[in-house]
Image (tube, rainbow, N blue to C red; front, side, top):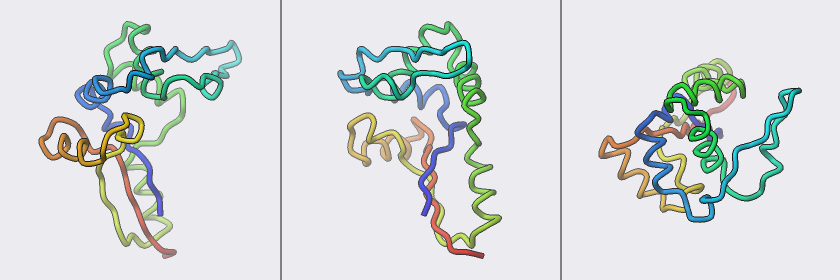
Length: 135
């Protein structure tokens, strides 16, 4: 069983929807410090969620969301959802594959709230849920 996310589905509308729903505890999220050696302090800032930190870093960057997201995901070496599913398909017989809500736990929302926004076409389904067995 694998639960992963497709970062490429974290488009402008989905990001804005998430940022508009960040809990108050994320209001003081600070951008991560990046050191000369490329190390960042992501795990050293307990306040705020990863969404809150990225909202703050994006605001500081002055970039449009798609450019910021591309730079962030490339720097982190994140694979696309399609690449993840292809790698799983190469090693396992797929028994179950769905795409759906991903952000609701960080946003402190019920899963159904995010699913309703997906169903209405307001945001993208970013979660990948894959179950398989050895091929």
